[in-house]
Image (cartoon, rainbow, N blue to C red; front, side, top):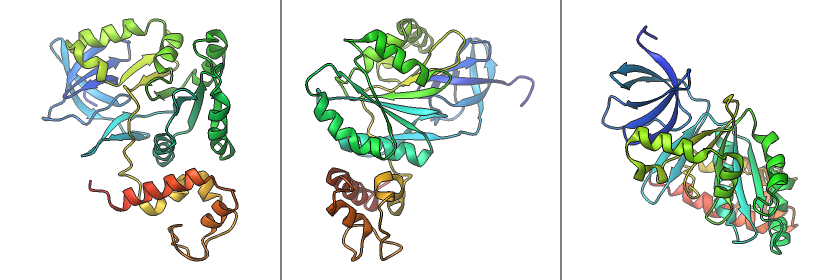
Length: 299
C-alpha cells in the first residue's frame, strides 16, 4: 500500500459510488475507477484521497460473499459476514423456499445462520414452530421473539447473539425487520441520514443495502438489505446441493450410486428417508425445485 492509500470499510454502495468508513470513523464518498463497481457493503478496501472525496485503489481479500438474483442476473450484495439472521413469523406465512435458498447460499459461503421466529404472542405461532421444527433438528438455531409485544425480552435475547459480529438481517415484508432494526438501533435514522447526505441521493437509500454499528465501540454491526432478497445460487453446482442441505446430507442410508441425484435412481437413501418421514416432504420438494433450477441455469 502506498503512502497516499488508506484502508476502510464499505458501509453503503450505489452504482460507482460507495461510502467508505475510515479507521477514524470518518465517512468518505469514493468512486471506482472503472465504469462499474463490484464493491458491496462489508468490503474492506484501499482508497486514495481526491479532494473532499476518494478513489478506490483496491479490494482486500473477502472472507465470503453472498449473491442476490432476479430473472435475468445474479449480483453480489454483501461480504465478510459472521452470520445471517433470517426473520420469519406465523403471520403472514413465510415461504420455506425463500428460507431454504438463504440457508443454502449461507452454507455454500460458510456463514452460520440464525432463524428468528417473531410474533410468538400470536395464535399462528404453533403452526410456524411446526414448520421450523425440521430446521432445528438439522442444527439451525431458532430463536423466539415478540419484537412488538415483548421488546425488552426480545432485545435481551438478540443482543448477546449479535454483539461482536457482523450480521446480515433478512426478512420478508411483514415479518418485523423494521421493528428489529428500530429496537436494536435507536439511532438508525441518523446513520441513514449520514449515508443519504454522503451519496447526495436520498431516494437511493431506500433500496440500498446499509451497514449499522450496534454500539459506539463499533464492536458489532447489522447489515440491512431491503425486502427479502432472492438469493442467487449460481455459485452452487447442482451436484453439491444435497450436501448443503443438512437433513438430506445426513440421510441414514447411503445411496447405491456415488453420484445419485436423489430424483429417480434406484437405491436412493435420501428418497427412502423421505418415505420414512425422516426428511420432511416439503424439504425434499424444495430440493427437487432447486436442483432443476441449477441444472438449467442461464448465467
